[in-house]
Length: 86
Image 1 (tube, rainbow, N blue to C red):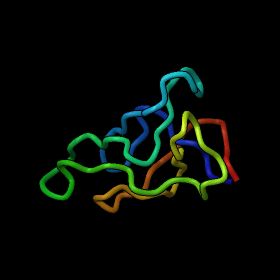
Image 2 (image 1 turned 120 degrees about the vertical axis):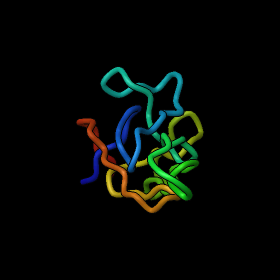
Image 3 (image 1 turned 135 degrees about the horizontal axis):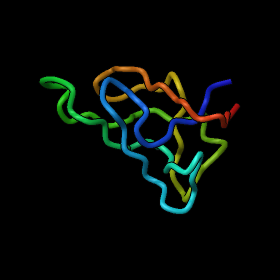
């Protein structure tokens, strides 16, 4: 099962979690719309996470992302938490 991505996980560049109250391993959760740090020229300079779980789970009204989901720059997200969503 894929692991939930948390603040600082990589999708080419480091991601920024969007949740405020839901924390995993002390970190906010990466969701659809999370920013990806610049890691090159366009489209890698202003990327966001564009995919999330299947939609069965939401956190603070947002769709969390898991390992294997993609960013707008097409890099795959690497989730490192010990929480899975299936």
